[in-house]
Length: 80
Image (cartoon, rainbow, N blue to C red; front, side):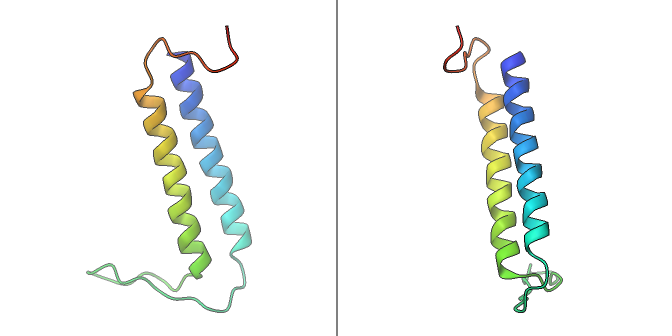
């Protein structure tokens, strides 16, 4: 149980740090397309920000699914 919690917290912390760095790096870019969501459009956002948000969502979902699907007797590599 502790290993699952540790994996989950590491994933959330890593995703949060990536999102923070992404927000800091996406300032003052010239080209700002907006996405058509079908029912409305998003605010104009830099293309790199949109790709970065998709990457952060992938890191978060992959880490959370790994943490939640790990068996309860899972041992981290290098631990006895």
